[in-house]
Length: 513
Image 1 (tube, helix red, strand yellow):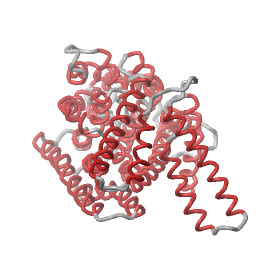
Image 2: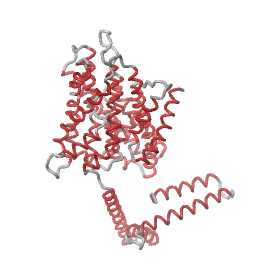
Image 3: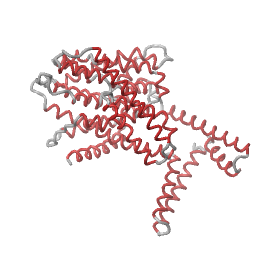
Image 4: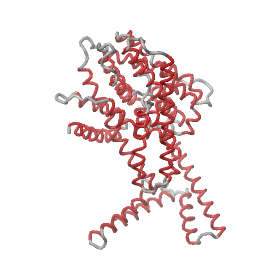
């Protein structure tokens, strides 16, 4: 019951934080971390200990799957080379923070290598949650998001090698075995993810029930993760591959009603899980700090130094890749490198990895520095989520890369007009063939022509906007009449719900006023 109460409290806390985040126009993940940190500092609040298996099995699969489905394959094809370089090379380069950790923290070299491996990769959950509200160009957004999604196999192998060195005192880890493990984790996870995606594709093609479609969408990431982990491959890679493949073909597997329902359900699931996971990051830090041995009071400055080293390495490594992101410029761009660096945050996955570090070496002796690694990892995660998260929008705006709101409006308007013209051409073709009744042709023609009408009234209102406003008013009148009929016992509750559903769908199709 205590665990259920904590989860419910975190969801309620997240709802309140999300409300203020929208009002203040700041990223909710950053505020959630601060809120969790504030709650943990309240006297009397019990310590929170979250097993890493809970985070890996319960929280990560649906969040990773949702992020992978949002990935644009078209933009990914344009930046796949820098994505591969970042997913492999930058992970190894960032692990070099272990050398800095030896000098800054005094950790044994083997444990400093473990710390470097833990902090080496960016976190897809944090990157997606922070980047969702930014108007970044497609290639920049895909580069950051894809890197965080596909660097899992590299970071997992690096982490296992580092832990093996620390536990075995440097005696039993070979390079060829690390390479084989990487192929097993990454390649095996990719194959299982593709197989799950293929099976789900076959099932969804034969499913027309919105409830069953929603259940399948919720079960798919867990199935991909559990199957891959059972085969001793990367469950995270499996989920990502399944999400990317199904996200590409999802619009062909279901109709509009099913897609809207699945999207609505997933929005709630993602909100709840992100709320819990980012609050946990803040709640964990004070608990871990209390477990530090004496003489570890310099951990805040040590964490800050490590975070700055990670940022510097990322800038230097990213700069040569900016030509692939902005090829029209033909030169290196510090602005692009700065944005890609600042958007690459750490999150809950490094925390889960740090918590899974063994308590003792192979000889039975305690691993020196494990408590400090846990604190430094959590502190760096908090730094990136709070400092980088709260300032990311400003960095993007100062870089000049952000798409202006007018650009998005023009692009959407132009695309909408293209859709309506294509539809109108088809209607005229049907009219010439006399394949449909003239009354139906005329009704659809007038609706499409009204949407293309851009003439404005003296007050600046277009015909299409006036039409939408009138339709909203008419639906409001119909809603009032529907409730009057029900209140006066002229219709049954079943009829009221059916007609209310139809009116809601009509109003939703009109968009916001």
